[in-house]
Image 1 (cartoon, helix red, strand yellow):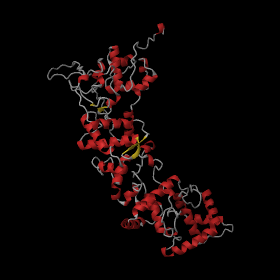
Image 2 (cartoon, one colour):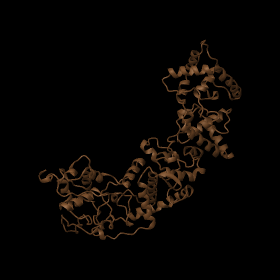
Image 3 (cartoon, rainbow, N blue to C red):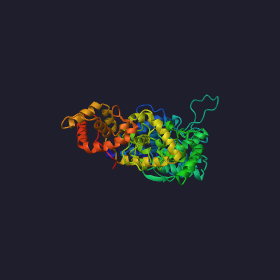
Image 4 (cartoon, rainbow, N blue to C red):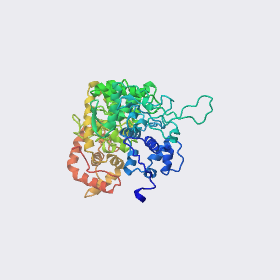
Length: 562
């Protein structure tokens, strides 16, 4: 480095500023060197032809090239240029979680605020290319998307790469006069600082600031509509409400060519819901923006699980309609909870789950695994449960299996080893409960039991046990081996061991273990005596099966919720 100078680095250093876009930094560097932005890239060592705004942005922000280092940028300055804004990161997260097919515009145009360009060192903000920013939060002005002189959209063409123009000048070329035949048109260069911009209403400004506020600190808990949520959940809910509001106007926020007047008006409409003080009022107001059949917050089970749904909008929508839903929907949406929820989509990414559940639901996650639910519910696990009624206990197990899931009744019945038509009889019993006003209380007890089992998961793997117990000879051999005298077990002993092993009831057992309903009371008295007499024998037989089986059975033989 002769004389203290690096001959490979330009002598003038142009540092990126906080929040500045790559296009803005290139233009400032071009003005400082008095060469076109394309030549700035060439000075950094770029060899490929830069022929579009997207190519220039990609080349500047790519972490794999070193030309920004040759232009004198430090590692920290290059990271500053590449790092996303809070609004941009939140919008990208929204796109990933909700898997929107067309979330970010493929265009490279930029909006702008005339007042921001009047500062001593103006920049083009990164968020000006974000379709969710329609209002300048510093000046309460609607952002503009065209030059008032030539009507060109900033950076819509690569013309700006050829000329060093101050950031407050229009970087487009003027339109060619009709019939002139001129191929190279003069630069517009209009002073964008003088562009007339409309002042926003108070609602539009407050809505835009709320969206920007929700975009920061995504995991921080806040309260909105009387519901505790994270900021990211609130941001996603506001974007979903904006999409619904704009849909009614026939516009979309995804396209930067949409007028900012429409976007700002849509943002203001979201306050109709988000300004509500409690979930009841918010749910009523939600009906003005989102219908029960709309994509954002449907109340049908198929639509609710077809894609990710916002948990705040779901809590408001389902809470508003909970009394009018079918029993199956009430179970699937868990309406007995303080705030109902949508079942998680089957293929929801693990990283997205925390954005699809309210903080109060985060510990519950997915519904209780069917493998951990016995054929008949454990005695004493619910208030008022009649342990002498096997049909009622099996009914509770089936209802618990449907809580928080949209799996069909026929599948759940098969999984629990119940008769094929059992859920048909269950439907009649549910109608009877609704008629007598006890259905809501039962839903509440089921919700409490579900939460308790989520905190204290059952140890037995009932699905594996039911599969293994299909081979009654296997159970019989285990009982024979466990007996010191190698005696064949009686039918009653085998039946009781089957019940304890599978978590089932002899009323639903396979032949020859099944007993008719009119003999069930006598059997209950008999199996109490068997439990006292054969406890050690049953435990030994279970240990033999547990050691020899390739399937996970889970210990102990019989389990009760703590």
